[in-house]
Image 1 (tube, rainbow, N blue to C red):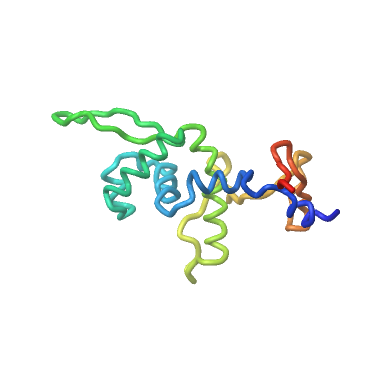
Image 2 (image 1 turned 45 degrees about the vertical axis):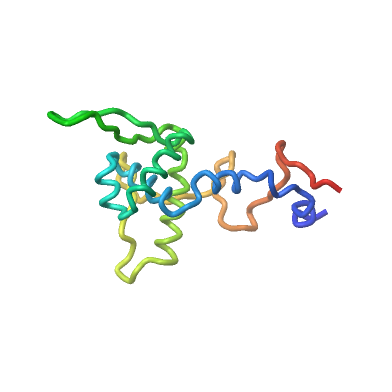
Length: 160
């Protein structure tokens, strides 16, 4: 049986891609995660940088906090009331490779003639950073033909 035949027999509602898209799959959520990853943590600067309507931004921030991707941390400036800033949790930081993959795709296929707007460098040595698929034996996968999907322990067959 080929993978395609086997894939067609699996229940598509049990899918890690679908679960992740349900969690973060809208424009404002990814842009918020980009900003927080880059150190922008307070509501006003987030709203100013993103241009998101305040209600949309507040709803997305609440969703990300409820989902455990961000945490609220109180701060207070002199003479002001207590406010909150938003910090990545480990669960949120684990989405960095997804953001880098989206960035790499945009740089490769959607960048303007001047080139990519942001370059990622390794703090330790200064070299360019590129996302890669690497197997547990440290082999770098170069294309689709290098992947051999198979049903995982959480897969379910479609009901007959």
